[in-house]
Length: 355
Image (cartoon, rainbow, N blue to C red; front, side, top):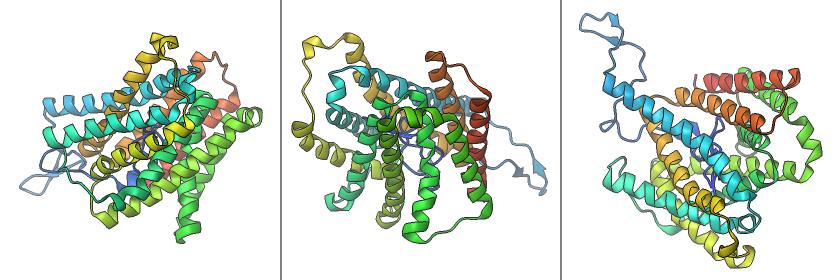
């Protein structure tokens, strides 16, 4: 599911993810690979200044309607990111649904495909293209893998630990890029990443040693997510498609792969014994995950990748804060320092990496 998959979600909430987080939640595509999908169909306001006919800089006048639409897109993205994490936690807390995570992930992929198809074909948000099966099989396999591990991490960890662990996807991408591809980064980038890792370590140190299984799953989750990001970046270039076009093609393939595994891995639930709270959460989670994917493209297209990254840090803070409030956790000075270091360094990384 997402991440929920988030997400089955579709994860997305880390600085490196915008589709499902996978926030968590749902972040699935690297921010570096996200580009405006159709500049003729959307209004952009990335430039802080416009030049008038005399060559002088003037402050832009953004129409009220455009501003309302922009803020609505941001609100939809923030709300869906936060909602998918907590809704998925309800789903995975059910003892029966906990044993059919493959089926749940397949359901999320199917709903995401339907919503993306409608967004592309009927709403004309992006051109719909269909790619050969062999071209998307490998990336679909990574897609399914990171979503399953993300769900397992959410199952065996608290919401706050799950969300903070997802942030580690960013330094893992940098490390794997260096090990596998020989790509290096600047000293400023390394400093921001080191600070980020230290901040996450301060906040999660207690959980790391008290929940070894959950920690191992979380490490596997953000590692496979990092590999997925690297591979999907290559596929976007090789296939010459946009992120939503690739997601539209990989979602049904990933769904098919998971359905093949359901009979061997999942334990079918007794529907009569499921409570309505779990059933409602399951149904809603699929649509929230799909809305998360679409809203991320809208925010990127109407603002900028850096603006989206700032929003992502606020979403992380909101999710962790709500989780701690729900757990009645009293914050220590170490926790506060860790939060400031984590969010500040994540923002610094995004700023430096765009230069």
